[in-house]
Length: 173
Image (tube, rainbow, N blue to C red; front, side, top):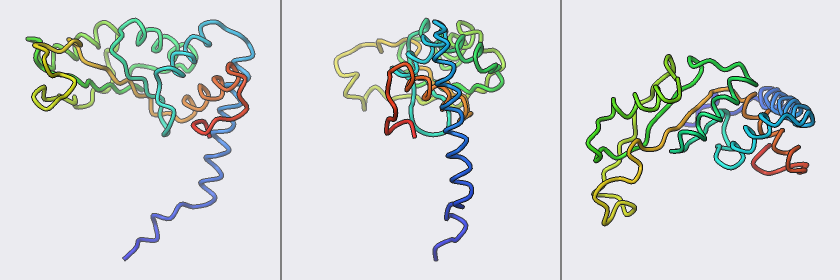
């Protein structure tokens, strides 16, 4: 039997659409100020961030790139470490354990106090990527940084629209 409570409320759909559009408008306005740091953060997100869902998510193995992204979200959105969750995706074949891997990311990104999600540990025997390698190329794996805030996501997406000169994009609605 189909549950009726799974049917979306049209009022809620419209409410959240208006809020997403308002956040995108804020992003467009901010982009017009032509602040270099804001543009860098948005361009990093355009290239490496997740453009769907309701959270701002950046996944990468590049420590410098992730530092820049964190500087951006902390400066422009007043995000604190407690508002951020992280997750590692890795192989455990480089003579270090998962605690050492998390410590590497938390220490180097100054992420003390963030929420730490369970790691996704890959099995090298089942990986086509891994064939012929003795050890993983990414000693500390890949880190996912997630901020559960649709307003931040849509601010960034609206700014990307402005920086790129696009009116709309399928991934930004």
